[in-house]
Amino acid sequence: MKLKRLLLSLVAMLAFAAPALADTPDRAPSDADTPAQNAQITASPDKQEIPMVQENIAIPFEQFSLENGLKVFLLQDNSLPIIAVNLWFDVGSKDETPGRTGFAHLFEHLMFMGTDKVPNIDLLLESGGGSNNASTREDVTNYYTVAPENMLETVLFIEADRFAHLADAMTQEKLDKQRDIVLNERRETYENQPYGKVWLDMPGMLYPASHPYGHPVIGSVEDIKAATLDNVIDFFNTYYVPANATLVVGGDFDKDKTRALVEKYFGVIPKKPKPAAVEIPQLDTPVTNRMTIEDENVQLPRLTLLFHSPAIMEKGDAELDILSNILCKGQNSRLINRLIYEKQLASNLSCGQMSGRASVFIVDAIPLPGVPLDTLEAEILSIFKEILADGITSDEFARTRNSIETAFVKQLQSIGTRADNFNSYYFYAHATDFPAGDLDRYRNATVDTLMKTVRDMFTDDARRAVITVIPKKNQEMP
Image 1 (cartoon, one colour):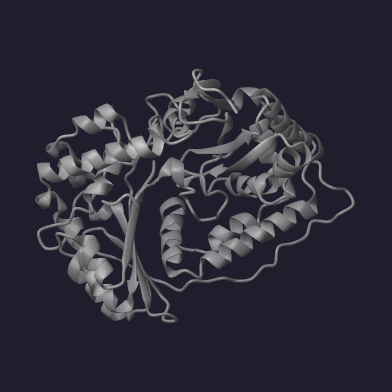
Image 2 (image 1 turned 120 degrees about the vertical axis):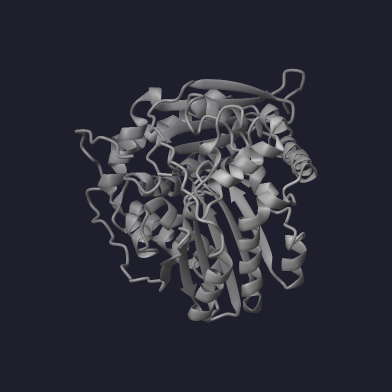
């Protein structure tokens, strides 16, 4: 598999605050109510809340299931001669056992090694003008292809063929090749990438080792090296079963013909039991509150603040998407305006809700040369205290919420994104009322519900985890 497939969950989660991107999610991707507190919610007294423009947005679809348990959704749109095939498997790093970390991501790589019938998937797709990719997160592994409409049958055949026959085509040579690629990816993306070690150490800081999220998606070097051919075949036979997958086909096609093609190619895959669901405990406090990483690949320090937050689709998840925009989107957002423009303490700053079946809210900042990290941290926390004391204004809230709806609707113009977001919403919400059901989470949010979430998360200092990255001691800071 080529290096273009580097969309691991913790890296993908840097794309913040986009509804229905459970990945964001990258991660990852999922899904916790927090108790109400008896505190006065403060909003601007001289302004009434501006309502979001309510328009009905519907995506027609047809749903059916095959006898082997595969759930299928057809999203027909004949406006452009393009199709998208999007396949989600309910397997990610959450399903890995001690000594077997990194298996979900390793197998994602192996899925592109081809079978006896299709030995070179990329060559076949790209020769017809198509493109494909995949991602692995804590919760899910998904595969997606966008191609001209005349390639629909080819794409469906490729996906069904590797789904049905990859285990039979697996060899030690293929495993060794992809193992080396994954280890190199780990070095390039994490170990030798500036600040990359944060993502390797973050899971163990936030979760105990026994927690399904307690290790990085890419896995440990030792476990990846120890993987055997029998290990990966067992993993495939356990999790790559029809009852553990959902298939979305979108774009320019005839529904009856497409259903017949799906039944023809995917219907022959044997029925197997769906693996037991993994329980994802919800946590309030991190395992470790502070950590310092010395990094030989950086010249400037970095500050990362982390807070356990409501799971994806739960109360508070949409509110934190809105909060991240209020804090970090645009020159007038609270953190960027204060830290970058007004006080000139930071050169770079981002924040967002990393939504998954267990979620984390993150604030990430790089100070200007000479600015101590504790000064930067104190200023960030002071803005949270201001919000706790004074609240969010109604017009600030409404502008932000409306901008999220605009971004939400715009991204649906892409058939590939539409198919992936539909699959994501079904995966996490177990519902088919997309996009209305997803968008309603933001439309139904209010200043009151946002402030409740803020109080629940940011009042207690024990909930906060802090990672500081500093240049290795034998290096000089600029």
